[in-house]
Image (cartoon, rainbow, N blue to C red; front, top):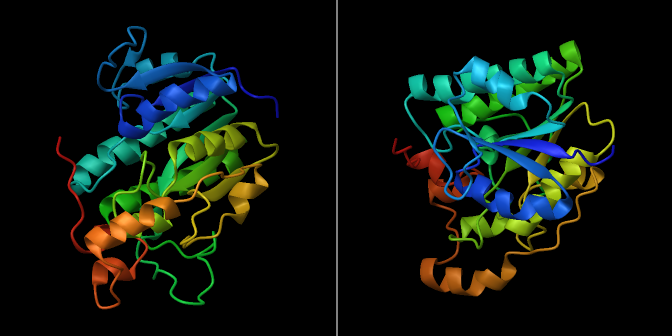
Length: 269
C-alpha cells in the first residue's frame, strides 16, 4: 500500500517512542504524538490518558495509521495492567474503528511467549505460531492485544501488524539481549514495512535485528518487506566478558522471557 502520510504515535515520550520520533520522519511520515506526559520540544503533542475516549477519538481523527506503543512496559499489579494495557488498547481500537483508520501497528512483546524455552545448539528457531506462554501480567496483556487485533480484523476489517518486540535499545545491555535485540534503525525499518505492506489482515511478526545469536524466526517480518541490516554480534565480546555466557542451570536463562520469568522488573509509576 502507499506509505501513510500522517501516523499517530502513542507512547511518544517513552524510550521506544523517543527513538521512533527521530527515525520515522526520514521515511516521509508526519507524526502526530500522544503520551500521558508532555514531550519536551514537542509543544503540539497531545497529552492524554488512554482512558480519555474523547481525546483518543480526536487524536486518531484524520490519521492514516497508528503505531501503538503506549502503556505499561514492565510488570505491574494486575489492576494497573488492565487499565493501561487492556482497557487502553481497547479504547484505541474503538477510536480507530469509529474514525475509519485502516491500520494499526501494535507493540506486542516477546513476553507474550516468554515461557517458551530458548533454542539451544541445533534447535530450530522459535516459529511465529509458537503457543503463547506469557511470563507476566504484562505479557498477558500483549496476548490480549494480539487477540483484540484479530477480532477487529475479522469483525471490522481493521488491519494490524502485531510486532513481538525483543529489546530495542541503541545497543544490547545483556548476553540474553544479544539474541532478541533490535537496533533502533531496524526498528524503524520494521515499522515502515508494517505500515506499507499490502493486505496484512492481522499479521504477527517477531521484532529483532538479524542477530548471529537469533532465537526466533523472522520469516513473517521479512514477508512484509523488512530487511534488517544490523547484528548484535559486535557487542558480544564485551558483554560476555562482563557477564559470562548463558547458563543452562539458570532459570532466567532458560526461557525467551529471561528475567521476566524469575524476577520481572516492576513499573515504577
